[in-house]
Image 1 (cartoon, rainbow, N blue to C red):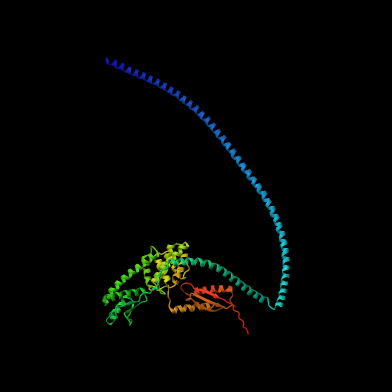
Image 2 (tube, rainbow, N blue to C red):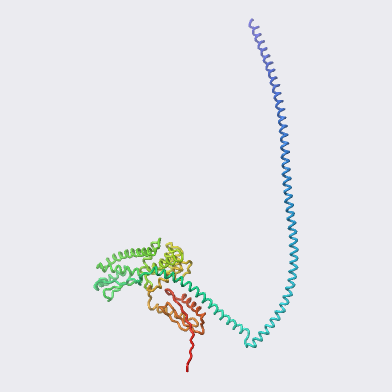
Length: 520
């Protein structure tokens, strides 16, 4: 029972403490709410003041921007007004200028109309005068025809013939003066260059011929060359491709073949067999094979020596071998390898003197006749075959054109091609360079005289100096002094077109007047 009051007291105390705590908390909350309200009011007031300040500042900035924009627009408008005023002034000036031009055009039109009226009047006047003039001309022509006894057509034809003769004589005289002047200058300069080139390449040259005979120690060996029933000579001919001629000539056997290289092979093989003394078909085959190898080595060596002597570098081995084969080829008795080297030297000297590429010039000269090394084996001229061979082995266009044009088959397209033709003629026409057969020599002289005799006014023709000069005696009444130069040039051109010859041919026209009287 004593605990009940204690519990009740405790309960009352707890309730009283809870009420007190609630009262305290409630009072504290009210205080905080009041403080928060005051703070909120303060913040709202500050925000309102800040907003008002920002609004005022924004209004001020907007006013400033609007004022600046207004000023800018006023300036732009003023500028546009100024541009419009300038354009208006230009348009006014153009209108004024157009009015002035229009006034001048109207004035010009009036002047042209007046001039047109005057021209019409003059045309009518001239037409009347022309009619009167034609009538007077017709009357004068009739009078002249009656007095001269010739028609106008006949008189005109006679006048035309007279004018043609006079023009021909004048042109011939002018041509003579031009040719004399050009010939004097060209001859002097060309003579110096050619003489210098020939002097620098001068050497003791002999007309080489391919050896076609084999000397024997005695005539008894001829029987061994022939062999039993001719088997040795047949085996040798079959192996070398040559003809072996064993005749009554003492201690000599003739080797005959159209191909000079094959002929050299036959000669070498026969000399080896004669020196060895053992001649039978088996031995012949071995000796021919050995001779072929030696000949190939010698051909390559000859080509290499020619390239070195001509100072030409970088030549294809096949071209060097073709050059070596030319050692066994002759033209009118002139060795073609020596001829090619000589042309290369002459071209190099001439090119250096004229300021051209001397290395390329020597290359053109060395290869200009390269086709002669294979023209026995292939169809075509040595010019065509040489150009094909050079092109095949990568030679430059200048070399190919020099090969094609050095005989005039193709027009030259560069200065070196012209030099190649000149150097070829110099080498072929120098004294002692070539020999030709009596038949071809006589035929060339006959052709020269026949060509010159075919021209009108020619009386007699003489080919002299082994065909290197043609002297033509003309009729005095048909050919005058001026036309003699024209006739010489025409004959020379026809000789160039129709004949093939080494070097140059001089054409000389001789005209003389003879008067004679008889004393009784």
